[in-house]
Length: 205
Image (cartoon, rainbow, N blue to C red; front, side, top):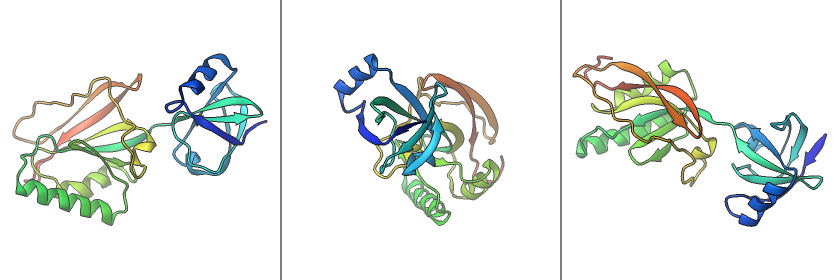
């Protein structure tokens, strides 16, 4: 078994390292949200190579490790996340109060939270129905709840993102009543489906 026990760098920060990966017999390993925080774990590289990882740092996408001189590039397995889109909410004092209520509700549940523009992302800590039941009373008319796959690094403290769409548009036409529907789009080179539901403060869904 190969053991990756030293950190070399990150391809996003070292252009010379990226060049080495093009020429060396490098491996790629995909780690989940739990493994990336462990100091040591055993896994399998994407090509099936048995691999041990022993590093004293939290792994990021693009990190490069050395296993007996062989380079190993780290990829992060995406996680499911609830997406609360406030783009359709009127920007007034009521919306500010709603944002405070939402933050309070999320904090009480000890859920991680990441904000990008007018969207809030929460990793799936419970079933969709239970999470929606917790959040819907605090959401104003015009807000939507959807689902997506994101990098776990999105929820790291001070993270600048780690989430992207080939098509960033999430515009939908709705009637007066709340309803749900599904759609799919490309994300980091693959497709997946996620539902979007409009929130009706009067209680219809």
